Image (tube, rainbow, N blue to C red):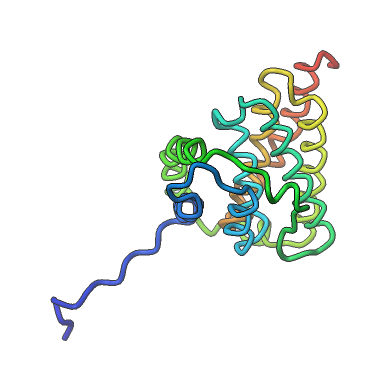
Amino acid sequence: MTDPSAPRPQATPPPLEAMLEDIAASVGNRQAVLFGEMLDTLGRRGFGPVLTLASGLTLLPTGMVPMVPAIMGAIMLTTCIQMLRGRREIWLPPWFYRRQIPGPVILHALDRARPTAMRLDRMIRPHLVWLARSRLVSWAVALVVAVTSLAIIAIGAIPGLPFLLAIHPLLFGIGLTTGDGRFVAAGFALFLPAAWGALWLAGLA
């Protein structure tokens, strides 16, 4: 018979909320945090959370801060190169690792992201798991996001372009993080429309 006075085990938070909590814990009350420290927290989970973080910071108001889209694009490009090389954890050059981001800015971005993360967590199910775990699909994701990252770095100063190009990397990141292949499939489906929209914004279409 169960003892009613015994402490109940705490429920594990859903994957996206857990990721946000881990980032918030790494920031704490500090006024500045090294970007590499946040990636160290997420890197143990694989490359999906790193893509989710970099693309999410591009989509959130932090993406309007000068140079942030280019930095996030470089992070995504570095991640994709290491995915293609078969590495298990991300490695950053020291100057990337030591780059400081204001702690309050990160915490504000996490607060903005939390309602969306909660809604997405309710949608996540173990569907099309093979699509999120396949090595071949992982390479395809890496190639697509690498091309996207180069575009963000090269012409990311065009208003609206980083936001447009960060959507499908975010879907890829969520799919790889949670094992829900529907998000990966949605990322591939949005890639071509996003590429055309980027060309249109750049005046090349």
